[in-house]
Length: 193
Image (cartoon, rainbow, N blue to C red; front, top):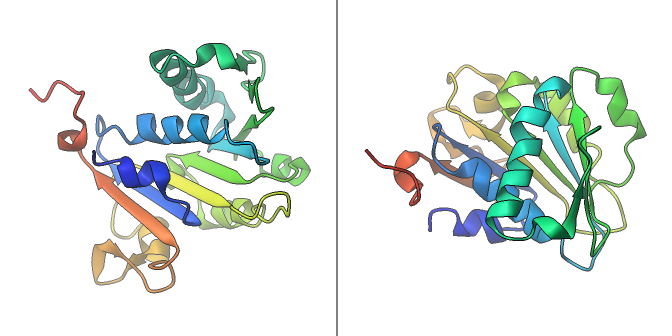
C-alpha cells in the first residue's frame, strides 16, 4: 500500500529512500517491468556506480521480480552483458556503470533512468545522466533514484531537500518530484519480527 503512488506517478523525478527491507527496490523493479509493456516507445537505463555490481544487484532483482509476478517468459535476459528486452514491445533495459562515464555518450534515446544506490555517485554523474532524458520519441521522461538514508551533509540532501528539513523537498523539486520514504514497517511481506 505504501508504494502505490510510486508505481503510478509520472512525475519527472522519483526519489525512494529508506532502510534495508523496506521494499523500495522490489517496487521500483515492478514499476519498470510494468512500464515496459506500454505500447509507446521506452528505453530504460538502470545504473549502478560500479558496473560489476549490476549482475548481483539490479539484474538479479529484475529476474526475481519477473519470476515472482509470473512474467519472466515475456523477457529475454542476456546474462553476458545484463541487457533485458521485453519480447512483446521491444522495450530495452540497458545497464550502465558510472565507473566509466564515457559509456553514457553512446546511449540513444532513454526515457527512464533508475539509479540504485545513487549516493555512491556524485552530483556530476547525476547531472550527466539527467541530461540524457530528452528524447522526442516519448514525451514522458522519468529519473528514479533510490538509496538508504545518508548523512544530511551528503550532496543528495543538499541537492533535493530543504536545508532545514531533511525529509522535505526543496522548492526547485517540490512540484515535479514524487518522494517515498519507507522502512521495513512499510513492507507488508517481510517478517516483521
